[in-house]
Length: 471
Image (cartoon, rainbow, N blue to C red; front, side, top):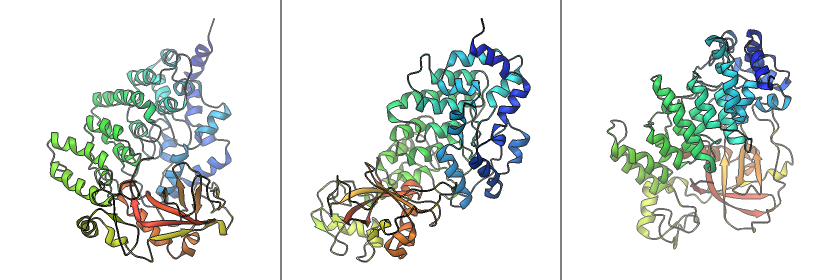
């Protein structure tokens, strides 16, 4: 008696069926994503390449990191395109379903049912959704999101696909490989060993083909290590270093993982420990020492009253100019003023920014995929914070000042999407944006500050308190 998988295998090896689900993105019934697909050409993606060769990576031309085209593509990448809609609609093909669930035995049956290598290649390299995910991408997604399924083994499923010839260097719409995804937000610390085990199989398969996947670049020319540093994952960076990733490779805005790590000492140490062991003309122990000096001088610890320079002793001396920076000694204060960056931000009239989105009472508008950005904060002071109490916030910005700022605390007891006009009446929005954008620890996309609620509806952000940390 045939199982559901045997029946599905017979259907999937038919040529027409392969072509249908390979082109599913172009026939999507979802109006929103259909509209977004039509916008791709005007945002720098030549869709004809994928249409003419549906098993290929499609257009992989470079996208400037700080452009509107980049923001458009990043927004699509951040929400996974229309994958959720395809899954919820029941239109996900059986082979992709089995990969998502990590059902190794069923995937093997479907592969073995192929009558030719050509049919097998179509099964392994077909793409699904707006982001053009291959089956391997679905395995990685499932490793994060699918738990408790009997017989599920995503690591073994990935190895099976690779052993049958799946491309380990397949790229999605924005050029990211599976290694990029393994080094990004999908990789939770609680499940990191499985992600790294899957990554080992990818790297081994890449080595067989002469590919150095740990240094693969996407369309923004970002390597996986930049993803890892952005997530502040020391363990992921260590795994990449073990596999000889090069942290000096720059994206097309001139940012590298090495430069970003200078604001994050724990990661910088991991990167430059390798620099001490492996000869390199581009990065070495001397560069590591210089980076450590920069990190020590620029990044204040998360403790509000520790010395902002040495980060070790209590800050008993306060900067008289701004009232924010604290130091353990006059020597540390002088050092931080000269080399730590405090001189540039120490101004009484500029170190506090007031955000008051409650005045408008409206959503700040649409993001670049047409989705409304809700106003999560009503103006009420969260119960876990007292008026005037200093606490830490994260501020995220887009590639241009037009994109709303997103501000929230670690517990997300409030979340603000604010417009330029909400920041001191619009007078300091550009200054605020520039400070976050020039903060290299997170590629100019986010930074941490200390803040306090002055009164209901008003949040004060200490400009001089910018720092890097991990949430």
